[in-house]
Length: 275
Image 1 (tube, helix red, strand yellow):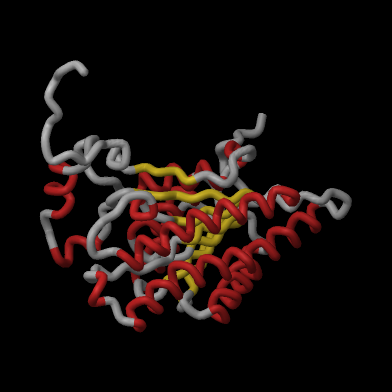
Image 2: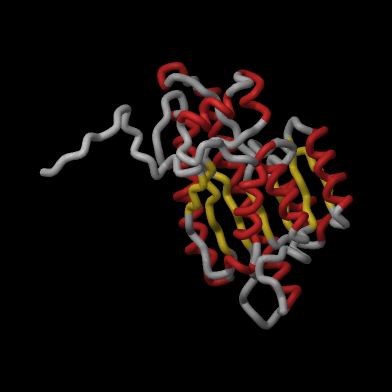
């Protein structure tokens, strides 16, 4: 009996996979049986280390450098990934950038840098990936109209709740959520799913460059679960969304944040009483 949670034989591209969330997703997908292409912009060492680890699992893997703020680079990356893998079954749009800036300090250059990678990059990577997913579906069975496949767009709790200093970033994450819902509806006829992975605070290297105590302090004081998330947490959920087990699930935003967005952020404990 086939295991619907397995990714055996799946061909998957993960963007922004040189470190952190993207790397965690790629490694877990490989453990579940997928062959992968990992894209990176700056973290060549991390991406190549992940590739070697994946190869050690007996899976195929390749790292490709790409600036996904440029549409031509999005198309090139997806085409090269599909050529290496022999098609595409899944795309994880994880590449992104944030800059912590007060609203009045945001310049046009700041805005364009965040918008181009977080929105344009995800949109055009998804568009080109869908073309390859449809082609792969036709190769499997020219008589049936279903391509199959899964797109996982990585957003953030910032697309749902406010946080000072992230006006542009939060706007792009809200846009990703809306775009993904539209994409899900449009792709239903070809059975390509589109969902959003919206993590809370995740333990990644960039946080420690500015605050070595970030993980402990934030987890202890803010997150109800008592810790911040780990890249492997992202990997577990992304692997489910990429698998056939999520076949009937599309157009959803999955928040996973240790209860952060479920918590009422009051600065005091409400008193007992009746009214």
